[in-house]
Image (tube, rainbow, N blue to C red; front, side):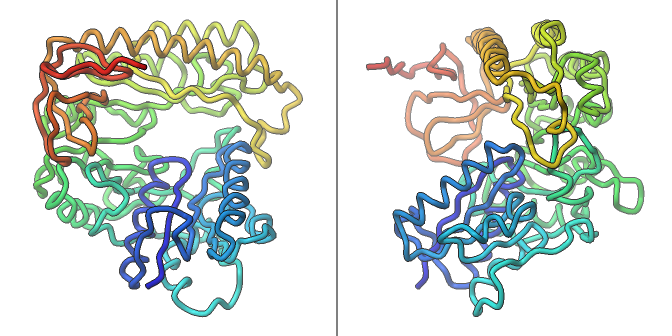
Length: 428
């Protein structure tokens, strides 16, 4: 029996794609391997959001081919869609499959190869490409269900619309059927997408994400839904109100920010201003006082001055963020931002990243301290648990994974929390 191993790079949508590929290969009679070294087929499900992401993929290809020269290497995902010939030219790469053909991978690897590259025009895709998720093999306790793909925005730093195509949504019935299947096995299901808040805009009937979530609550037995990243202006009053009112929706708001400077946001071609963003976060916290609030933030965008960075830092400091994903700007060839003559020196970018990460760590510590003495609902993992407000918890005693439990918080542990009765493990 042939064995396969999959490595996913990038976002939750890619992780969901990887889980679907894994299920498809298993259905063809292949067996998952514990490592690349033991695999006959290695699938690299790539990201291409930055040049750094591309570098990581190429390094991984070279390492795997060096350590397992007999393994077939299949490269798929966003990098494969963007630059298939570049990847096909690498020693050890057997197949390159773009996002346009990703659902065909189980068939491609089980029949004789007729070509090395399988790719089509991603903008010709009109339907959401769905794959079975019955086994949700990518995660034992918190499966990612991708319900939307592509993006209609044209942010000046982003290549993703050109490798994922236009926004496309799974139909409500598709999503309901898949959530019913997952809810029979898992306590928490994470809804994900490339631009999740745009779900439904391409479907008939003027449906919105909030309409889908209501149907999922009414027509499935899922115990907890978690929304992954949603653009700030798609966190409507209606959606935030539903999140606040339902105990079956995780109290977790992740809204990409990128910058707190109005001028930088304009150069990024983002569709909101800082005042709009602040209004959505204030609304979320008013309805859900202890909810997690996270954001993606970029430092060193072309032309970002010291004053603009300070404006962004002060804006971030003023909001109740509980965590941040801080990224140093990296030129993405093919985007308008990469062509700018006002590139910020790399050393300055990295120093600004350090400043924001220190600010994020301080905010996270303050937030975790505020949880001491509270009882939080959490889903158990292979190790520990994850609270509905997105905090890791060290449990007092081992529990089976994939349970929803109430946990009394006694203190802090590492970058998470400590259940009452648990012993803190001190660093050696």
